[in-house]
Image (cartoon, rainbow, N blue to C red; front, side, top):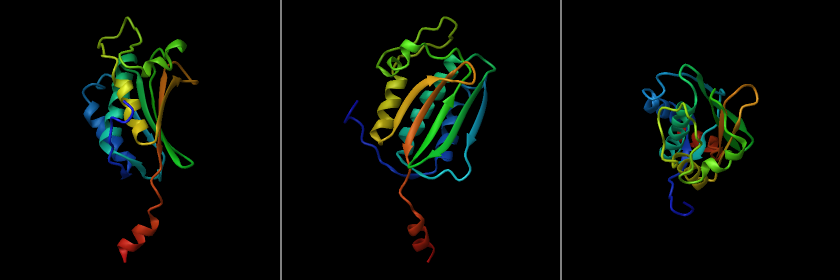
Length: 170
């Protein structure tokens, strides 16, 4: 996917993107509990809002497929230096260690017998392509506090806009 995606980046309020992705996912995640934990004062990020919304949609869809009904799916956002990290955490069985990197390969799927919805194996590859096209990263791992997976998007923080805001107010 390298070079195939042209993103239109700009300063975006991540809470709006998260809200929009969750709204699109409402029926798919209806059987789960969903929590949003975005730090107060989270800085704007330099992203293409449409592509990151789709990346979040894919991660949330994945969580819905692999986490049991009634379990909690959490979207957490924190500032980390010049970046903002968004985590999607679920309470499923986690990711087999041998699959942690391979799940981002095109057409690769982790096999789970009790899953109701099958996927194409493209969602995470697309997600990685979108995020990397904007200078970010996406990683997968297992939760340390309980059973489940955690996907982390690291997105570039938008340039300091305080001077612009002061000019606009004048």
